[in-house]
Length: 639
Ligand SMILES: [Zn+2]
Image (cartoon, rainbow, N blue to C red; front, side):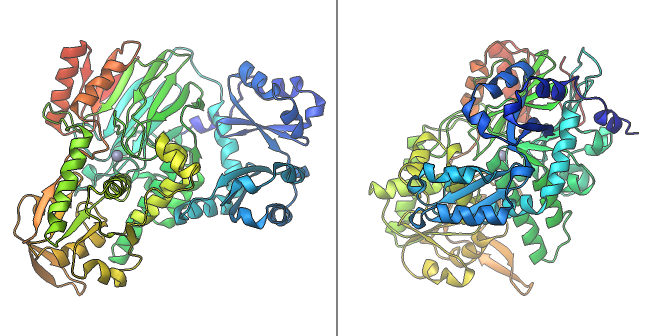
């Protein structure tokens, strides 16, 4: 059925390439113009021309209204080994090179070093003539294996990526079929429920998939995965996938899409790509260890990575002939985004919030609400009940600190099961801050599980953290997460110190006691009434965490040999509310009220049925706006 593919290869927008080639002076040395995904790349034999004549590119961008980048033509680029050798010679030893990544697709080199200011810019001028463009980055104090894994994948797929970016550029800039647009939204998952978030936005010209998650608690396939079977279209017909953030309930299905033949781009921020790569790889590793079949493998994760087109916040990106995308900070986890889609020539503007927090945290700035225009708002409603109001943050912190102090003072241990991404880093900052102020009793904080790697990813992208943290990391070279109070348990054999007698705080994944080291610590600590199990995140029905929180006095756990063991829960069990990465009820309403100009409609998703109903009626009453509560498989005409 796919004659669309041929259309995609059809005529380019008239004359983009020709216009550029005709108007650029010969001194610029531009030998060819190619699409590079959503960008237009000018390949030059004398890239210095553009450094000296800085007005040239903005002029082209202004007349074409497209993103334009200058690339060094291969013919004047030295082979990587030679360039690498020279760079190592030019950078003084004291600057401490940690990593060099030569991206053959863009001709850019990312140089991570310990003290960038020791590099003399004059020295690097001689590197310029090698035909590579250098980006210097301060190396984080903890290396990330996930970032390495991504760089390795990009490197090993260089030639495929060149072809992929060229083809997706041809497709983005193909001619539009119609001038008048209809815009339609179809709910595929995460509507009247939490989990498997996904939806399709269609115009006459394009099909864009927003998020593609799995339902962690779903048992049967029709309820675990987004209803892509409903698309009645080839995966080839999808122009782009936009990912709001790196959580499994928004992104867990992506490798399966690539496995079954989706070949298009994935747009998200750089940290989102890193975080979802970590979570997907970990899910695969755990199921392999448990001897289970999994629906994708490492190859599919690598295919996903090689099709990712990372974009920064605030940059306007063409993703199809009639849709422009901008990502805005959503304040939920590192790199999380609200997705702004500008359809047609401004005919309609849609904002999909993803998961968002409209308040500043120790980790992130509050979600941005400053969109140029928005007519349709698609918003989450995790905390959509009137009663879902969290106390002021300081009160939350102090209740948390008091709860820990009570246990430490009795000589007990506090086990805090945490999700590795986001919540763990927020809790680490809270513990460090109050221990430093001597409000929290001083003791060792042990951390184990994926927390270390997720933290390393936070340190690699400090520009996505809030201003204060960013300054501490970039300006002062600090690691604000792992301070002298923390001890990383690298291997299960090293748990003795954490488990030996005396008070301690233990942070371990997973957050709901569903596998991972938190379960092992729980098994050791649950029997002693001096200890405490302290939850800081939502506990889904059916998980071990939820059973403990609901007051079970005994649970059975699988031992290594496959035998069941009964565990008595004598320890105290508590939960502190208020560290969530989601907006509470008041913040949800405040956000709607903040949007200008006035909305035309609101669509509520990502919530339990009653929360969606409650939030919808509040928005209708307060803002006098039409509010829709679609179910999975419903479609709404937006324009
Ligand atoms: Zn999320």
